[in-house]
Amino acid sequence: MDFSKLAKSLNPYTIKKGFSYLKQYGFQEFKVRLSERFEKEEVDYNEWCKNDILTDEERKAQRERIWEYPPLISVVVPIYKTPEVFLRQMIESVTAQTYPHWQLCIADGSGDTAETKRIVDSYLSDKRIKYKILAENLGIADNTNAAMELADGDYIALFDHDDLLSENALYEVADRICKTGAEIVYTDEDKVTSDLSERYQPNFKPDFNLDLLRSNNYICHLLVVKKTLVQEVGGQKKEFDGAQDHEFLFRCVEKAKGIEHIPKVLYHWRVHKASTADNPLSKKYAYDAGKRAVTEHIRRCGEEAEVNDTLFPGFYRAKYQVTGEPLVSIIIPNKDEKETLKKCLDSIKEKSTYRNYEIIIVENNSTGQEIFDYYKEIDGRDGIRVVYWKSGFNYSALNNFGFTFAKGDYILCLNNDVTVITPDWLERMIGQCQRKEVGIVGVKLYYPDDTIQHAGVIIGIGGVAGAMFVGMARERSGYLRKAILQQDLSAVTAACMMVDRKAWEGAGGFNEDLAVAFNDIDFCLKVRREGYLVVYEPNVELYHYESKSRGYEDTPEKQKRFLSEINYMKAHWSEILTKGDPYYNENFSLNTCNYTLRKR
Image 1 (tube, rainbow, N blue to C red):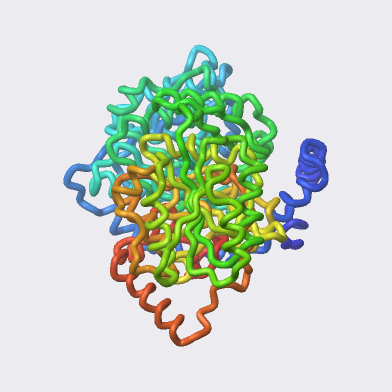
Image 2 (cartoon, one colour):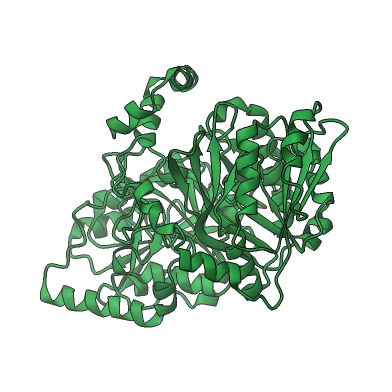
């Protein structure tokens, strides 16, 4: 823990807030969250930010650029009794933009507006600013809609009355619109202290991630939407006040033609005593509205799910309803490991609340009599079948061979050294896998010491691919809760991975040229290439008894094989390895697995 950072933040208000948090969550959870909030940074963020300051040359070039078809961007701001210093700084962050084709639309619901009007009037000499005094405070959603009604632009940017834009924010957005024609554009963001003395908690976002959006409004700010799309969906809804942006965003992404993410921090969310950013417990109604927004969005998409809160306000988890009772074929390769396999099978039988499954054990050249005696004991009972692979070890070939015996609509690749923790693990995975857009579902795995072994895979980590949050304590949630949130990823481990049969067949199964390493990564990427999502489902938990030291390539033969598999991945997936994983922000390091800032 960074104690200097903790000491710096202490004041009567934060101490009072801390006691409130302690009362709400208890000592153990408070301690975990405190350590995460004040974890020592490997890279000082405020120093890192200095690289983003425009040079005079860059500023001049942006201001003087000749645009062929510049989109007019209407920045809409509902204000309500905004403190003068915040209001002026907000307005001036727009007037300082290096992109000139903007409009600022302010709807004032303050009631007694004399003071606010005096402040705004001082800027109205700039004809790009439009200001409307509302007869009454209509609430955040309808105040925003009133600001939208003032907009003449091709695109609408949502902006809070006490926040700030980087001077090149609208330039970057316009540039991306001109290049792609996207109907939705969003950027990275961070938080700033009330006096603007410090920037912190940067939110470096992935490219569009449907399941992460269902878990939390990760897009938030800056959000820019084509005006025709805003008109098509009908603006914001008052009944979702507090989560109005999240609900509005769902309706937009359901219809949008093109969603673009700019991996630059261009929006600064000011934190002060009244803001949700500073005190997430202050707006419970907002999180209840958010839960309703997620539920209704999922229903509009033709699915049914039970949406619940997590321990963290504003973060949700969905349990998708299983349609029917489809057969799941569980494929488990095994060699000699009687006790390990027995432990795995016993956990499936004893823990699982879903019963319609078959288990296909792929025997791989065992040598001990004990395991063959065990096979005789279990083969043909409790839905278990043992099949015999005669060639040498090849993980891909073993799973492909097992698949030829599988009768299920869903195939579950499972290592023999895992045990089930979550009783409804199969229901949760089937529910995800039955969604038409989902091809693969992966889960959260722990080492026996309750540290994380797998929380999804990022392409490029360590050179080719790596699991996230390896070694992090089970009770921790990780960077912006990523370890505990349902989200789409490029890959997951096949130690426990459910695959839709159609996705398996479309991808052609596992590539048998990859006998040991990266075969599951390659398989996931092939499934994604077929147009399916790969979903990380952290609400399914298993123990993985793989040794933390396993995987060393300690013989010349193994090293040669491993190098050939690396070369295969680099040759066949050069585009994603060069451009970067779309579900991982380019500002993160590829040398660590915990979302550490990239040094620059």
